Length: 114
Length: 112
Image (cartoon, rainbow over all chains, first blue to last red; front, top):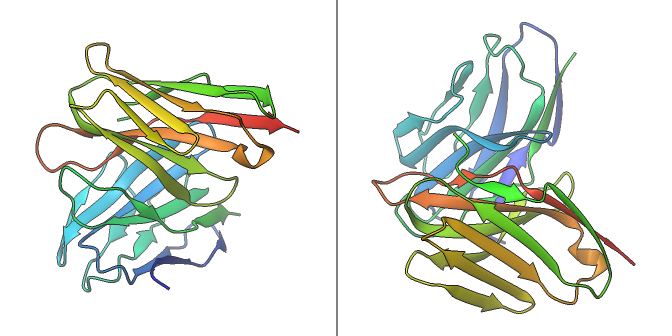
């Protein structure tokens, strides 16, 4: 079935460690996105990519990094520079990054820093 | 930046009643979308309304858009316990190739 797969669903990290969240889609979508969700704050955009080998910073990119080497994959690395990484991370994709179109979301990855 | 702001933040109703959620935004938009999120899950797209549309229906959902007031409302009629979720509006700006910006959401509880 077509969709977006995020892994792992739950992840625990010690302070000072980098961690990479996986996001894979088989929808043949051009654009992919990473959002962070904290309680009561809605979704905030971390990074997005509208085409392979290109990506742009969102509103809260500091302490995060991404790559887009393949159309299907858009992994997010939470680095030790991110001061408050505990959150629910959501990956999404859309047909293109243009002025139409809905987002398709994965089921999320919950990161907890111990 | 969060352009959309939903109101109320939380809403509790009895099964069978209608639920109305509102969204206000700041800049001109190309379209406005509503999403639903069950607790601990990803978001699911419900409906999209374009800036030149005033009202749109999908099943028990009715969305209105007033661009002069920069506001939208989502009405869920004859609510069910399964409608319990958070609902988010998201806007796409009219300028350039910009991603969706989400509001903080309305938490809806439908009591059986």
